[in-house]
Image (cartoon, rainbow, N blue to C red; front, side, top):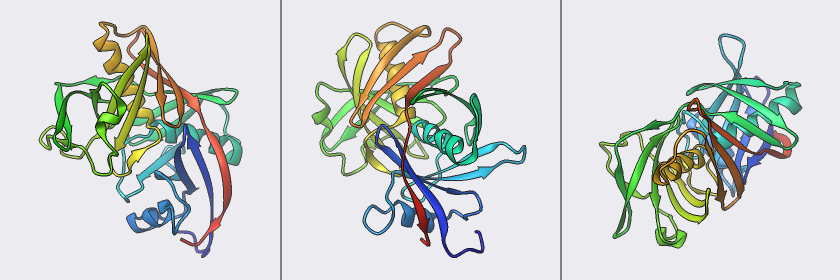
Length: 261
């Protein structure tokens, strides 16, 4: 990392899915990520983002889960990162950001940011369980894996203190599990247990997976849009006619300072 003992950070969130952003010259390790993300002894967050630059000179979102593991993609995180780049580095839109799941293009309309998440991969159905209750689940990949289960009530999944059970042969690297209820035509609500972070207030890629699963369950496909309500707010998801998933939601920067964690 930088030779400085202390380094700057910015704290932000997207629908209350919160992140600590640090400069790219800060070496992120599992121990440092866990220290930064600790809600009692650190700054606190569902994840940590390093503002790195790739070999092509493009901004790279170096995203880590709060437990110190790496993740391929974070839909809420990339919006927060885009706002950070705009305010801290004078980046302009449309903005291309490199991730472990390829290049994501972000546009801005006032306080709302839209990310082109790419094409969804729809795989064979599976199942998930919490305690002695189990549900069929739609297996959808949006840069990282998701299992989407429709339930009668979001309380059915319990407190989600422990990771839901799933087939490790289907998800050898772990999985984000979303529990979903319908609220109105083209409107659903969800809870999520994120691998590496536990239950969170929102998950951008998870909301996209939920939208795809909901559209398929409704006999629809590309060319439709849904509102996905999360505990931390509301996200708008469009499935374009050319099979792209567009995620729209807020990104807020709430604090900045220095730390020696």
